[in-house]
Length: 137
Image 1 (cartoon, rainbow, N blue to C red):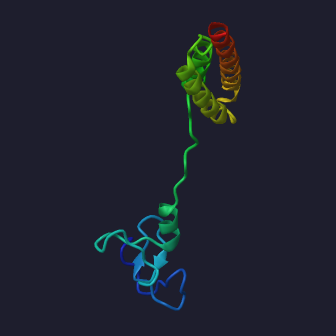
Image 2 (image 1 turned 180 degrees about the horizontal axis):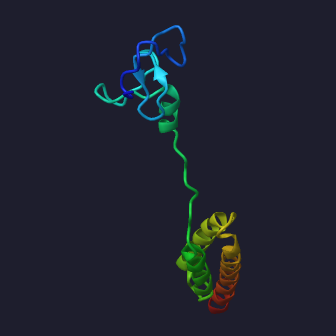
Image 3 (image 1 turned 135 degrees about the vertical axis):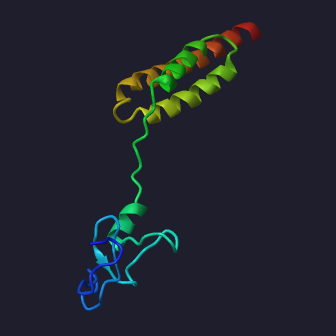
């Protein structure tokens, strides 16, 4: 049997009292003109269930590698340098983003890097303040 035109005795799966005009090209379900869904007028029709399946999208989980936590840790170490205010600001932003991205597996084991980067940045801010006070006062 052709998937395009069913036999005269086939009825629509959703409307049993209506004679089917098409069979779904994907699953073979019989359908009437009211049930057919098409991408383009010349395309083969799909049944409502296959159409819904086609329109659904499954978002793949985001996969972030270890680069951001490592960069945040390096910036945290660099923020220990005196007068590295710009590096400290960037380190805080990068480490907060890295902290948020390492909440769930598989990157959860890298969370310590973001925490350490934030801690080092905090120490760098305090150290920079002490050094600035020594030069000013």
